[in-house]
Amino acid sequence: MTTQTDLPVLFTSNAITEIKRLMQIPENEGKCLRVGVKGGGCSGMTYVLNFDHRTDTDESFEIDGIPCIMNPTHEMYLFGMEVEWEGGLNSRGFTFKNPNASKTCGCGTSFAV
Image (cartoon, rainbow, N blue to C red; front, side, top):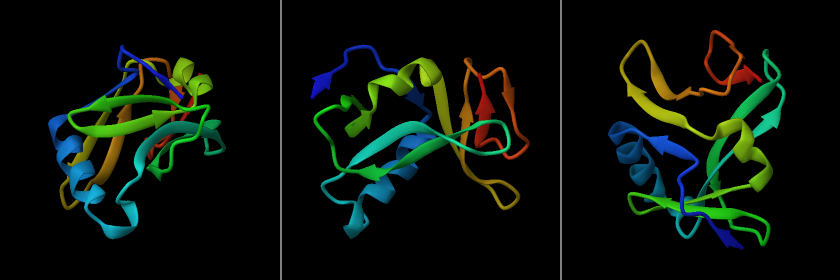
């Protein structure tokens, strides 16, 4: 396990509040927030944001008391990304502002580099 000093991603205050709320759900206790990407989606790659157990190959970092993990190969796609939480009636969920994305889809969860 490696620890990173520069934060690869940022969370807005609304996102931090929602993540901390989700951390209190019994099935998420003792887990870290996994931030990453996977192939798929309408633009080529999809964001991963879920609770998971740390592996020996993960990089770890902490944001406002939230333990986060990331596969080190995903950092090149996500460095500088901002994660926001929108809790409105018309738009609800996490949104991603990724400066590395050359194209994004309309739903905001898929991107290309």
